[in-house]
View 1 (tube, chains in turn blue, red):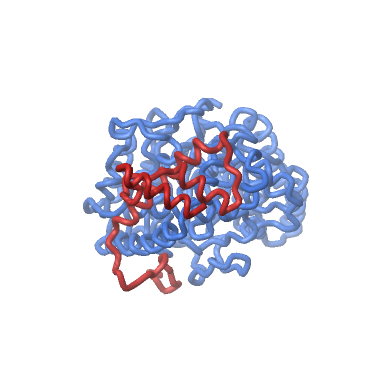
View 2 (cartoon, chains in turn green, cyan; view 1 turned 90 degrees about the vertical axis):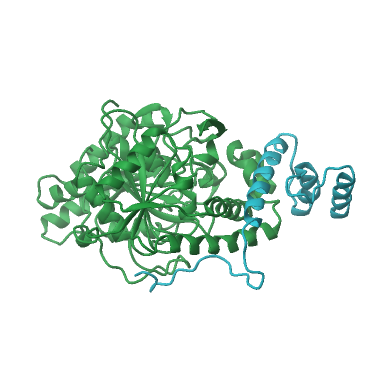
Length: 461
Length: 86
């Protein structure tokens, strides 16, 4: 399944390929590639073939089909999939009753004609930046299977990067779409907080949880985003403006954008290849200057404390009764979070508002800001530390060094893989003002058209 | 238990290990005080990790405390309304 989503949908609409043939190819690719990348925890073959047959009948009957008709997709296994327990990367959750309905975004993608083919590996309860999982095994990077995918939407990044599916869904609380997008070399969209419904997804930290798509082209990302937009009573935070499709805006929304490059905190610690990627994107987008915002560390600290406390409270009963069944790499962080003083949490929420105002001020002369996504290319699986600015620091928290400050205040971000002649993938973030996903996607599309951004399949897998 | 924790803090303070000082924090004392209150069993297996992450969280809390916020307001979290920037 090397074809992109829009090309697959076009081939189906034109009658060049049947949905059944597309799904059979995807299932064969999963069977061939998954033993290497370990991206899938469930393959919903019967369901996929049933829907494909229905789509083929509909097309033969001359019925209209959706914009994603015939496109296989897969979802991080924290999204409800009818008939499966929603495992959220956890051993404990496998004992939950099977979901009786699909998550809202699964329903919306299927309504657009996309075909669910499986559920994807992830870090336990989404508290992860590495892609490692003690229960389901580490997800492995398609560009070098000895290396991390990034997390926590590890399978979502790997399944798309490997070419198992052209489209996946992930969640992002502190960077969990953007970090695997960067390390696996695919595009990812973390929309504005409240834009896309989290209905029917297993939560992590309500104040900061976002959901969004990953794909190998901007048009695919935009098609999926448009299919998923809209309010939803299942998610109390989901109260966006009226949906305006972005696909028709990709040509226009990126014109005359005032682009700035975030310096200071965001220019420190990254590998030269990462900083070069930022510079390349900045040049291509005609960036007007550097922007230094003070207080990033405090903004990130707010994200840390809010995540720690809300996540621990969510799992408190499970921690009391079954801490031995947690992944050791998440367990002790959750336990610590359950003990934090309430005042720290309230302070974090207050600082979060302060940080949002500072970032808003930074946007005064700009429509779009550029920052690195991760400080490094994909580390080795099992690696515990990173070298940042010549200092050895713990790897797990620091992979999200550049992503946390934006999810903390809900800004929309497109993670963009920057084309390289050789070497592991490296990505940048295009950050827009609230509700301005169209601008970030249009800028990403411009980078893709000019060959600055690309998500090629691995040369060997 | 909390009284004992406070006493331990005071003792440490008198001994020059000022726990009120932002740079000094005794995670073991905190675990001993708070884990029973919350009803969390924290054994020898978990304690080293919990100790480490409490220390990290304390560092984050210090960063938050260093921010100058107005003393007549406690507004929590950004709120995006549909009209914002739309």
